[in-house]
Picture 1 (cartoon, rainbow, N blue to C red):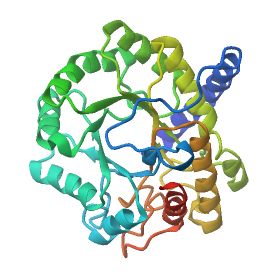
Picture 2 (picture 1 turned 180 degrees about the horizontal axis):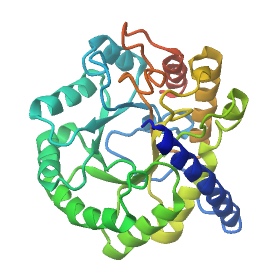
Picture 3 (picture 1 turned 90 degrees about the vertical axis):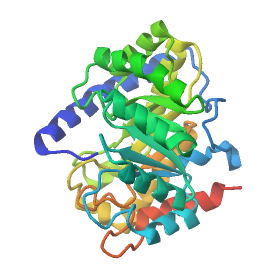
Amino acid sequence: MFLGISQKKKRWLQYSIYAIIIVACTACSSLNPPSQGPSSQMLPGEQTWKQGVSSFLFGTNDTHEWSTQNFETQPVIQESLRSAGFTIIRSFFQDNASDADIEQRIKAIENSDAHCLGVIFNIFNVTYDEHLVKYLGSRCLMYEFGNEPDYNGISVDTYLRQWNTLIPALRKINPEAKFIGPVLSTANLDYLHGFLTGVKASQVLPDAISFHWYPCYNNSEMDCLNMANTADQEVTAVRSMVKNILMQDLPVGITEWNFDPGNPPPTYGDDVKFITSFSNIALQSMMQSGVAFACQFDAASFAGTGHLDMFQVDNDAPKAQFYAIKAFIAKYRP
């Protein structure tokens, strides 16, 4: 996701507020610490790699396409992800997309030899959402319900109403599929609390919890690098809240991550040394907290005017962040 100017100010305010909440929650949890290891519940296709690392830590995104040359249209990019060993690709299945468009997205994932994490983009379009899950069948067994409802003005009560209505219907269509919520724009503990208490009451429980993590917003290069390890504390706070409310662990995932969500982000993101260091520290932080699944944002869609992509869309050339993640895969894959 990337932001306009007024939206950026709103997002930055959210970061400031929830940073305070996260620190407070973490401090409280230290008095009665929950289990900090990864959940024992496995997602479809997930494996445990060396040192207990989840194979699904090494994913990426196929977001809205801002260029005709993108992950879906460029077989070279798909082959690069396959050969590097990327394990999961999160794809934005657009509202009312044709079957041909759905097929193009899922085929690109399959060509990359990755597992599908589908984003059900419009949670209010029941007819299409049911068609999507039915059409994809066994080809996609993980879905996020919506995308950043907290950021897009969907109240937790409205989100819960749709969740409680539609998720049981989608589970009947595909009993093997796993459904993930609430897909927050940040580790928004206030929204998450409302969601968790709501699903506890309805007993329409999620199969996993997800949120997004962009620790920087127009920070200096050094300050941004110093925040590259904060995924650990955010995941810890989220997992603690899940355990305290639902009395069980669920897999926790970060389904969008990168250094800055700006459009465009700061230019230092193009520096090989910076983005390599940031990615290394970020992945270590996610490993430390036992993240079950994570998707870098993004593969190649001209996101952030191309500055967030792992590949140059004009020539398919891999960029430094791709090589950083590839090295981690080689290190931890059995």
